[in-house]
Image: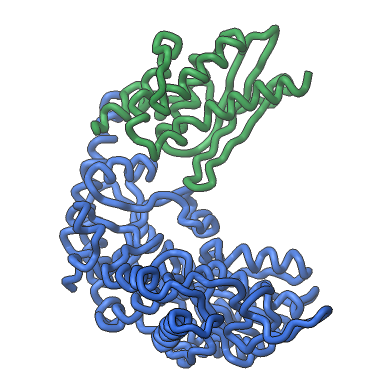
Length: 144
Length: 401
């Protein structure tokens, strides 16, 4: 297994220079905090949903490069997508991590995490930010 | 110490296994003893009068004598539990009727969650005060520190013997003597000491001492609680059912004598027998020799890490085979993924000791821990792996400049 397949340059770049990082004090955002008690990865995702579109995503947290970078990549990939499309990307992404068939075209930069499937111990690291995102939009549903 | 060939996992895998503080490997003769139980006399204990059950009971109680002898206790002072966690929970539960508001329970920030949460929750349930023995700047529990918080209200003092992160040895004998002056009961978490050094409960004079089989070459699912006889006789059982009862009536019952009073249900018989074999194996190696072997490996590791750029060691004064460190600027999980590819098994995370992580101001660390099957080549392999990991991640930094 090649380390370079797991740790792609784009992943390390998002890890060192995260986009959309820092939470906002804004009631319109739905916030979800997920912690992996076994390893200490800790991610919070904030989503602003309006007119069925993911208008903005913010994130904060601490953890390994895979976990932290995936929050940053997610925030860029999903921003400005209709909710249905965003959820579809999330579904394809999970499929990719667990070695199922997936639509590579939909994933944009998130395709960089394809190598994770060969490192089963790290699938959780790559998943929790996406899980948190899904919870923010589901929590949003409940409020309506 | 030339015992690698006793461990089937090391035959199968080309490994530098450096995570004994989490769980140890199992030697062939322990596996063989457990097999024997299922092949030759697979019957329940303390019940049947037929030959097979008698033989199972004899071997089960032989194991109890072996484990008792290992810590210089009497056999009836050893309760078999599911492990050290379960042993510590048993004590906390059994003391609940004797603890109330105004009482104090002393623990430390050095504790593994298994010797922290049972007391934290006992304090919550009973209204007792949970007080932390202050650690020295280095992170040690000292006699002086205990003195500063010990009062006449102190009922229980629960402390680690060897920290699973810092590797420091706590002066439990001196702490016990001091706590006893104020009438407090002393509980020692020996999960990281019993596997690695000679232990003598008479000499330490603690009231309780807990340890796990799987950290000392035995199987998972079993551990031991040593308790002074008078405590085990006085305390009420915490679980009820078969085997622990003497006579059952419609509305009340009487209990067996300790230790059976605390062992209800069919125990993990094969595992207990395996545990007994593990302590015999360790005694044959000699616990002084085991301790010396690990100390040498830890010292060699510290000198190697000291010579490397970009490594922070958190316990350079470790007393045991536990070395805790990080590569600067690289998350420990990223490091262990690289090490895993190099055949080095290392722990990364908070080691079930989040208060120690807070003390170190880290969210996670790397931890190497040594045992009888490790040698200098394992340390060399670790160091090569760390160099590789450090250089690999530094390469990305270059790309970002």
